[in-house]
Length: 181
Image (cartoon, rainbow, N blue to C red; front, top):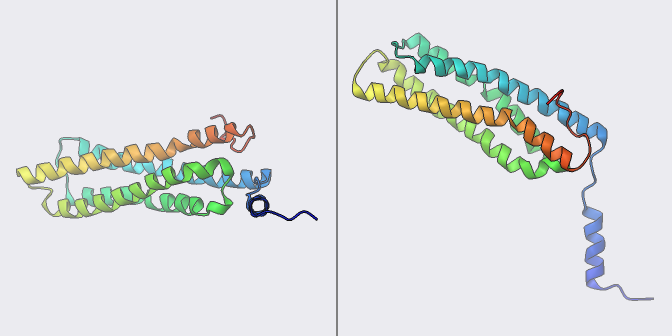
């Protein structure tokens, strides 16, 4: 009987731990969950857009409008956390999505970070928003820039459905059917 070499033993172990392709049902489930979360992020973007428009005007901003802006940007937090939770289940992700996971998570965490920073900035601005001093005008401009960045990052995540679709088509299997995308 031939003696098994160390390298052949290692190869057999590699074959045993090689991940299996997900079933079509698993892929459909992931597709459905990802689409739901992406749609929620896209919907929340409308609220962020409202806050952005408020700060893009030259009109005075009142404390209650700052409260509205805070509430508006907070609407994106839950859908972002839900999408993070889906992507955190790395062992349950379809294989073509796994390489995209770090990039998507970085963008999602960046959105959460932007919302935290903006919330603090808006709370600070709220107490001085009626002042027309240079520091307050600069603060308003900084908020505007952060809102613009938040909108861009949210749009990047919303557009990830296209990246996910491309990844699935590389495998020549219908992992994602985004309904006309």
